[in-house]
Amino acid sequence: MAVWARLRGHPGKVPDDGGGRRRRGGAAWAAGLSVAVVLLAVGGYAVFKKARPYLHGSGCQLTASAGKMSLDLEQGANSATIAAVAFRKRLPERAVVIAYATAIQESHIRNLPGGDRDSVGMFQQRPSQGWGTPDKLRDPVVSTSKFFDALVQVKDYLDHDLHVAAQEVQRSADGDAYAQHEDEGQILAAAFTGREPGAARCWFPPDKRTESRRPDALREMRRAFGSRLQVAGPGALAAGAASDPDSWNSIKAATPREGWAVATWAMTHAQVYGLTEVRYAGKHWRADAGHDGWTPDEGAPADNVIVK
Image (tube, rainbow, N blue to C red; front, side):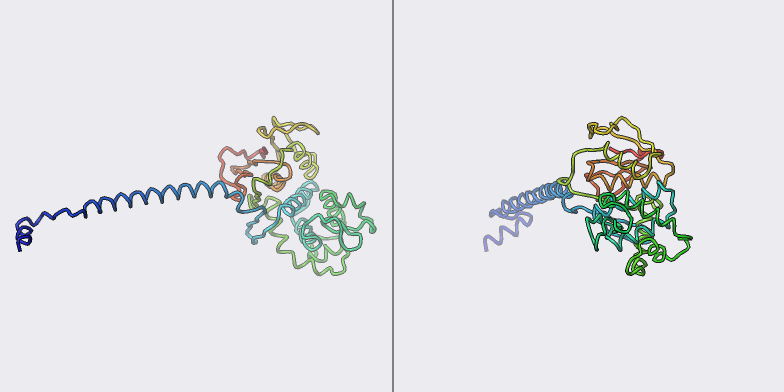
């Protein structure tokens, strides 16, 4: 009763039996936990950011109005080469679509060392049928050139159904098979001929990067697109010249569409030639963030493709 009386006499006062210390200790523990959570989150993000380039592996993704496609790096590089050769020969997009559908059916757009009987390369052309020597037909630029040279000899090929035009060139056992790849051919053509800018993105992890060989890349680019492609810049151009990874070169294309075809070619060949950046028409692709694709870059010129 005495205790109750004292409490009633001082209603605002509660005896400290150690509970205050417990509350203060609990608050400090909660604050410490919050700090730890924040530190873990920051550290986890830093680890994720560092590991992110490795998480996606390697590949290419096409996102066009006609649909989406996934490719590996070899398929991406070969697709860009087919478009480049079409630019050199000044062929319409329909010819490119036919070439893509044919290459998908024959090789899945891969430069095969062999095939049925003596067939080789992307288009599975046969030396015994007069297409050329095996070593030449394993060269994507040469085999694509030979395919287009034969295609344009097909009378009114632009007006034929795709599988009819392709079969006139290939003389395959099943000519109707080419028709099933027309939709894919249209997606590839939209992305690699530059009709839909920045529709292709490619990426590879840091441990797959190679030593810079930009002079070799530029010579191969001109071999595919043609010698009229103007290449300049402070970077070395001569055959056998040392490649400075901190330098750059510029490529002047005849049209914005060709510019995007050039930029996409450089991106798809970046892993092979050790290229690290491509800039064009307000967009920027970087090898260390390739999965992000083409990101905004106000300084990227509209009249030249910059390759580093």
